[in-house]
Image 1 (cartoon, rainbow, N blue to C red):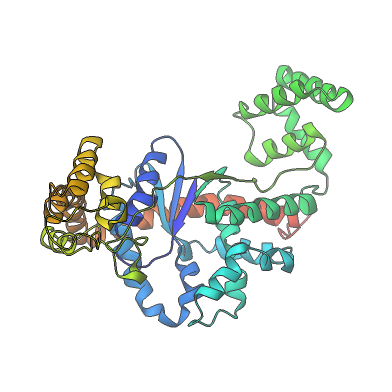
Image 2 (image 1 turned 180 degrees about the horizontal axis):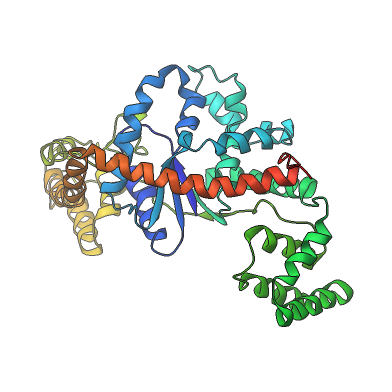
Length: 397
């Protein structure tokens, strides 16, 4: 799995419920790469680059404080792994211009960010950079929201186009036969039999058995396994893996004014918010405008506070809020009290861990340095295969 975030500084509860809780769940069952997308930040904020550096470390501290575990996941900074830029360049050579112009978010963001100069190649080509981020780690899954599915589909199309253009490397059949010999006589004989059954009789079960056989061949390199997968089905070598979009049903995290929680709206509660500020911000939240006086009945569905109760309250508390509001049995401050308690209880341990991490910046930097080293190792292996497929290895023959 691979996922990243642009460095925008300290994170808020919208990031926590929308992304970080999903990351902490995925890291327990998948090999995960989580990266700081600082190059992506430059596509729309290159004029404000001085804030990116501090934002990087603020965000990493929040990741760690929220439970992202560097022992289970690889955490790194995009610009520290230069292979991202190389693969981005090579993919841009084969990316049709029309593919980029039709990405739905391209025109949407131009319309939304009218105050910024987005007439740059960096902005038009950022989906290609995003594809490079994914493909360089061979990610089979990318957790995204609905608005990002089109980007993963573009990544699949670019991987498919690359494999079609460059998968048939010179001497492909000879290299595949040499790889078969590495499997041992018994497995080599079985592989040849399954390949013949599939290619001569179209036996889909033979194809599945052959693919499973390759997955269990520990003595094959990644490149040999990819060659034999292509040799099995009659295609070429799949140099780049086509990822699947893992659609995440992130809850809509409402802000203090009822709109989506966003820094641009100024309606956030940060992951390091103090208890006093949480109390103040929630106490001063707007409520149903019909409740002018304490004994006026209200409608919870028209109240931003109730939107937050949907995230934090259990069924019994929500029923108490609905009944009390509609009957004027409780006041707005009564309604807000359990919400204040719930948010303070959630934020407190995160805030404490963040303070400990901030007090030891060398430890945080070492985590990122180690993660960058691990990421580079994987990325370099991928780029060796990419250069070889394109013919850029220039080894003397």
